[in-house]
Image 1: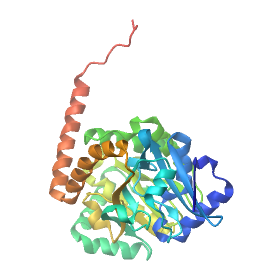
Image 2: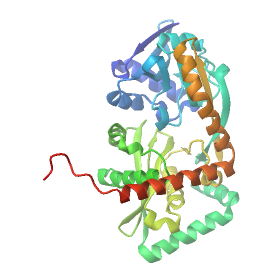
Image 3: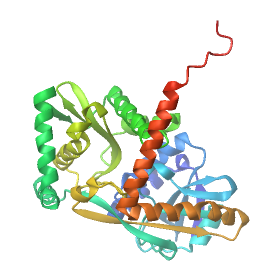
Image 4: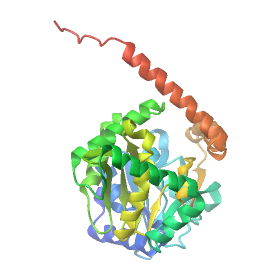
Length: 372
């Protein structure tokens, strides 16, 4: 077994073709965050992106995309932005994980959305959790019927609010796969506002993340594309989403809505339309990612398994990293496992967001240095 580490940009046509071949051969790898296109987009924007190419008998058996940070700290490609990572390989590939880390010059590798059960990392999985999906393989109607069974009251309420929105603000229409950059900016502005209101860090305050979405939005091939969707009431955008897709799977990534229309439940309304259009476009599932949002429990009709865990080699850097990360990971797991705690944590963060917004509004603008 030979392991070489390169930048994704250094992969040749044969290697990228082999990556796509391996990904398509295994249903568990059908996720755009595992696509070579996503690795290439990340590589154009971040210097710490690498990929291990694993060969045996002169043939590539797998690829391991990763981020290498200071002191050999390894992170999944895309880190906190993504909901799936792992080896893109033949199903039976089993490496010694520490040997893989050594070849990648990593002292530790933390994962929390790894494709569960991969032989190389399975011994290091500390927890395996379901990631809910909308399974559209049988079409839209069987899926919406399951939603009706899951929560008939919620579905009835959302449909009523949609009709009410249409009467009061204009006919409802849905746009699938918008190519308009201004529409994407509208969605980002809503999401930034949501981050601030709920006490979260605004991801779009980092220019490279904005550029990443722009680049993914510009990509549209049979195997990989950025998909921008939007619900309108009349000519007014109300709720939208930007995600990535393979030929058969759409991954939920950045949903948001205009808070002026919050009383109409526009986010759930949007998801119902998105599922219908995804099914009509030939997609077989929408991966909503693991997490504690209640709406997922009644929109789901299936689940994928993702794993949390940690691999490390003996080193001071790995020890320090464990001390800093272990308590945080444990606390996060406890909160997300318990709906009551999750709701409490969410309320606390929203309270912090309101205070922060109020403080920012009360502080007078600072006059630029040298201004007259």
